[in-house]
Image (cartoon, rainbow, N blue to C red; front, side, top):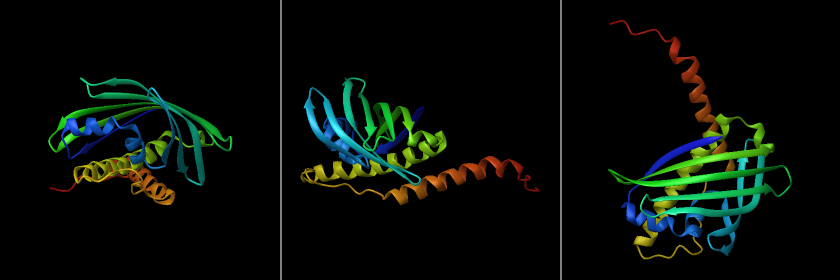
Length: 194
């Protein structure tokens, strides 16, 4: 399943690219993600926790940076893991591309996600909605991390703000309701009398 998202960061592209070069700091900005071991040569071990409706999954696995394009400002990461309770597996290829924007830098993210087990029971819409909520949090945490560095603060030990699983679920459900409303009710509204 291919999921795309984009957001803007109010900082110059060179500064955002420099931040993206520090993988532990970038991972710390993504809600539910924790790097547990730097294996060297752009290989990492980590954990990713996610709540999908009533199901909470915690994947343990690895992430490898397979491409870093300085000129194109693109980074590609392949990650794979299994739920710690054996309820599923996930593999994901993530491509993040930076480009200049009016307010600073546009970050485009494309995720090719394959899941099996408990998480696979949820449809593409729910997974896309949860991903959109997580990307909004990631963007806010990234902006905050860069601001901290600008003030000369260290990011070591800083835990970024993270929404609870319930808050993520509620936001994703509201997105789904808006989609249903737009699909079924908006086409049937009569035009205004003019």
